[in-house]
Structure formats: structure tokens, C-alpha cells
Length: 233
Image (cartoon, rainbow, N blue to C red; front, side):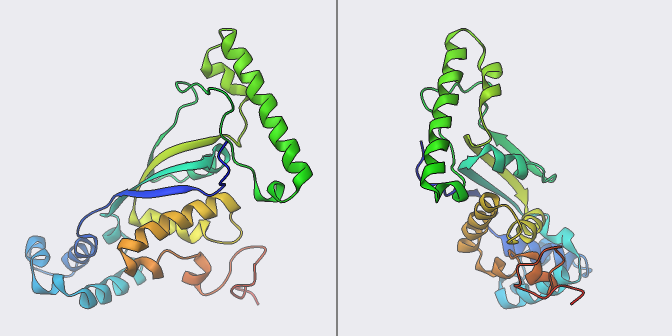
């Protein structure tokens, strides 16, 4: 079993000229010049100028210019409960470890929720129960039950791996929602790791990949963490 409950996230694909591509898309909307000329212009090599335009365009709600940017993440050591939430985001592509074709051998890897992890007695009960489930799964498989049916006993705590691709607009949207303290702990940590990976190579994105309250300036949740004032306060 994986002892470390933290998601393992790697950025494996991104455009080489992300900022330049967005700038070209933004300028094209307001210029009579050809896009390729904009892309090859001196202004497309001026980071300060590009960021100023992008901030203005995206800030005005013109989000199509950031949809041209596609990024891909390799994610592992997350639970099925986490990925069940993750795949509800519509504008993404996913490829996930199959419980139909990949048979678990021995004790399957699983994630222990932090609230259980910090209670020694409950943690041990959780571990024991995962062992019982593993034994039952192996019993079914050894009896000739196909893995696609034996998996019915496997819990949401099962560790899984997934490759996820999405455009920058969707990533910003997901960050705004899932970095909120109201989001469930595991997916919040996973999305933060995704954002951190991208910010390492594109630091200008740090002001976009934030909880929605940072973007709105107020909290629109029913229950606020207090980071920002609620809209009606």
C-alpha cells in the first residue's frame, strides 16, 4: 500500500510558445494583420506587452484566446473517489487505469482519508477492512470470476492512475472551483499540484490559477472559510 497520501502529478505536455500563442490569438481579434505576422512580430517577443494585452482581454471575459492552449498531466496515487469527481469536468480528455483489464495482485493500493489517518484506532480498522476486501477480491478472481465483475467489491479508496488533457480555460475554471477550501481535500491537493507544475514553467499563470474568491473578490459559497467576505456581507 502507498503510505504517502499525496497525489503524484507531472506535467507531460504543453505548447512550447504558450504566451506567444495566446497573444497572437488575442491580437488577431483586434488587428487587420495576418496572424502569422503577429506571431513573428517584435511585439510577440515582448513578455510585458503580451501579458498586458492578455490580462486585458481575458479580464474582459474573452476566454476563447486561452482555449488554444492544451496541457496534459500524468496523475497517480489518487483514489477512485477523487477521479470520480475529476471526470465530471466536461471539457477534458481522460485515460484511466482500468479495473476491468488490470487485475489486482495481492493487497491493492489505497488512500486513507486524513480524518481517519489521524485517529490510530480507526486507521487500523480501515487498514484491516481493506485487507478483508482484498482477500474477497482475490477469492472471486481465483474462483474464475472475471476481474470486471470481481471489481464490484473494490472501494472508492482504491488508488488509481489517470492521464488528463485539457485547455487552459478549463484548467483555470477547475482551479477556481477546486482550490476553494470548500472542495474535498484530495481533489484540492491534486488540482493544486497540477497548477504548481504548470506555474513552474509558466509563472505568469499564478494570478489565474487561484480559488474563485481571489478572482471574484468575494465568497459566493453558502459556508465561507472567511478568506474573503461573503457577497451579502
